[in-house]
Amino acid sequence: IHCVKALDIILRLHKEHRPSSTWIIHGFRGNAETARQLTSRGIYLSLGEKFNPDAILNIPPHLLLAETDESHTSINSIAAAISPADPTLPFNNLKRLLSTCNK
Image 1 (cartoon, rainbow, N blue to C red):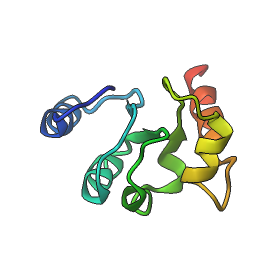
Image 2: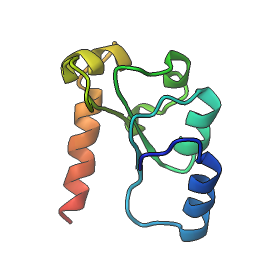
Image 3: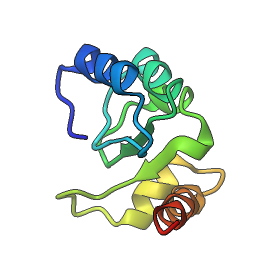
Image 4: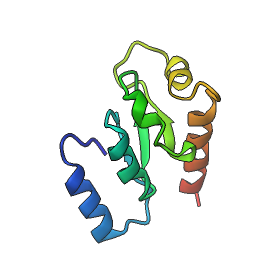
């Protein structure tokens, strides 16, 4: 989901429809509180090169993904920046997520 200034709508729709499919917020740049609100509903957050460092502290590791979008920064560099303790984490989350799509 590409969400710009529509958090209230996203949260309302998620609550109303209780989707069985996984939701991912693309290019998340929000703050810590926004990260908490989305991830408390099990929504994944995909971070690119321009992310809010304070938000990362409030994203459960299992809901963190990395992306490059139109960045010239490598995906490995972005993964290392958002998950320095374990740069493979965003990739492992994606593998796990994709494995559930085939079932």
